[in-house]
Length: 277
Image (tube, rainbow, N blue to C red; front, side):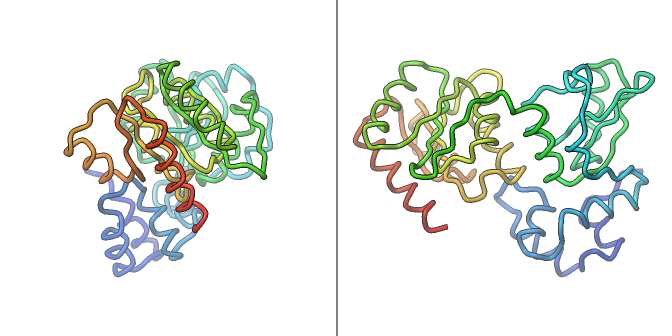
């Protein structure tokens, strides 16, 4: 028997109405946002409401305030940083070859199956709010990332696996007084973006480990870049390629090789948009 979808669970637990669900599903089309995030943006529910409903419906343990606790390194090492960020999961403890895992979506059976096979352990899901998981990730996984937040300057994150592209873009933008942070793949970009909350992200699309699209979807899904414009860089310059990227939600598109004047114009336009939000 197939498990119920999130919307059905929330209706069954009288958290939302059918009208709320219908409106949320319409808003969700064309985005990568989870249904819960859409409903939260509509101010219909809180994250805690979703966690309670999942716990009640399926009997998942509901874990809270775990970010303040200490965790053995051997437990943290079971889940790498980019996986934790991409899926909003956090390892809690290991007991008799069972990994207890805080999850914002404990119904993600495919992820649990993959982890169980990879780790040779059984996964026991616990439900937690996305905010609680993000707080735990930042505290226990991201503390080693050097990020200097300067409130007087605008921070731009550049993500590209080509050093020559990173250095050229950095030189152009630093002359204009922007504070520049660099990442050489989507996994590194995901970590820095989560901690830095930059004013603008400029990312290549084709990269190793996690590419630009995967990084963008992960950040969008966990709510880290709702108000942050993301510009896509790509050597694929057809009208169809540009259309597809903009349809995904990227703020703008810049073709490679990058022209400094074009880069500056697009950056200024994106930052003006950021300032209005």
